[in-house]
Length: 295
Image 1 (cartoon, rainbow, N blue to C red):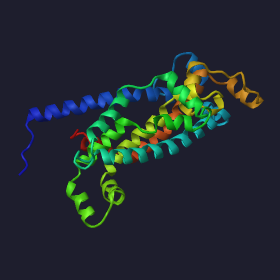
Image 2 (tube, one colour; image 1 turned 120 degrees about the horizontal axis):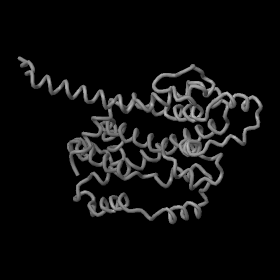
Image 3 (spheres, rainbow, N blue to C red; image 1 turned 180 degrees about the vertical axis):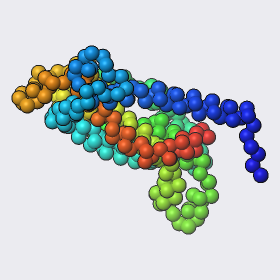
């Protein structure tokens, strides 16, 4: 029989839920404000009337953004980067984490290999050597310059190898006894059982590739090759409309405020990640906790 909660326990649970609700609301307030600004008129924005609700509702900012060639091109580049980058990240992460999850008796110098990867996570060659490597490989102004430098995220490897080490060893041993090799064991036994952790790492990779902006600025000589995050960083710092020649775009821009245009582009840049997260959220917590028990 389930014992009812005491009043102190109910008070504690109620306080926790209230605190978490308040913190969640605080995190949502900036997003709500950006969305409200993007749907408000220039006059209301300049007067400082917009807070958490649109004033003088208008969608002209989104109409302007939808017709802005640079924004659409940068979003397409980011979509390609996510598709290619996440695929490479996950493939290399699985292929690296699987052997490192084995015991030292099965993989000689396993601890040494693991420390080499940890060392690269703590120390890097620096910005200038990284740029020289990318330049000498003739990757500047290409999608590969955004993907290959971070092809193997070490933090994700550590999460995955810890998850693999938490799986029952008897599963792999029985697969080997039935004649399976390491490739078959990995793809037919380990990977299907690791979907919570894989979903978590995939979410990390998606967010990293979608939000990372610095590599676009240093590896792309032509702004037309910027991914969305790099493009948004440039317009937030300085919104330059001097290159617009379309009379209809100029007329529409004259009816807008710079803040509303920025807000519309920033909000649209957040939408893809907000759409992906609910599908992976149910795996998120279980993937994090299951991969955090062992070394």
